[in-house]
Amino acid sequence: MNARLVVLASGTGTLLEALLDSSIGGQVVGLVSDQPESRVVHVAESRGIFTRCVSLGDYSSRESWESDLLAQVSELGPDLIIAAGFMRILSPQFVDQFPRQIINSHPSLLPLFPGAHAVRDTMAAGVKVTGCTVHFIDHGVDTGEIIAQQQVSVQPGESESELHERIKLIERRLLPRSIEQLIESHSGISNFGKGTK
Ligand code: GAR
Image (tube, rainbow, N blue to C red; front, side, top):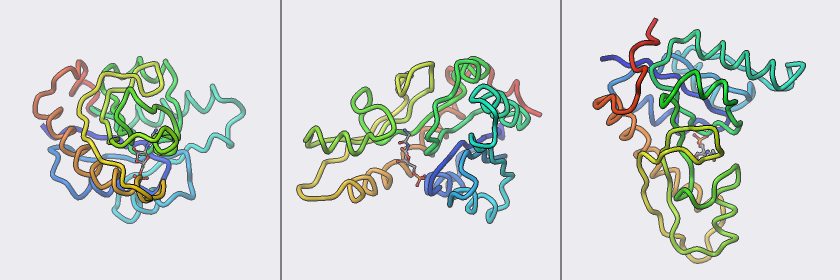
């Protein structure tokens, strides 16, 4: 089955590039970003990926932004939605629309260090081992069921950005591999294939 994958992202887009460069048994049919000026938008456009931008500041309220985000993603008929550096919380309405069809890559070993500053919080805590997690998105912040994790050791004296970069090297392999396994098994994706256009 050629699963339809929709990517949500806000940042530099190296995870999107990793997905586009992997054979994951699915097709990235769209990128939806909340950051029109971000590198990930240029990555998607230059690779011929259908791109939509929903910038929170362009909407009169958070609710109208949330409902347009839901509309834009729904229109793409996703089998799986992948938050690959998407720095916004999805509304409960959004999550309920796609039960166990939304996954996220996060730069810590959840449940440790959830939230937007995972690597900074990791360093502040002084732990020696961290890593990354691929998980389903539920109503909480980085609380959904864990799909895969991999450890990364913290090197003495390295900066937050150096550690984050080493974690991202692992994420770029773990995320495509996790998607491939989900597509192969369809495990837990109750609506898999039903959203197809
Ligand atoms: C990744 O490290 C991802 O885990 C993180 O943003 C980075 C995106 O990298 N996401 C979060 O922190 C979400 N809480 P990229 O823009 O190079 O793909």
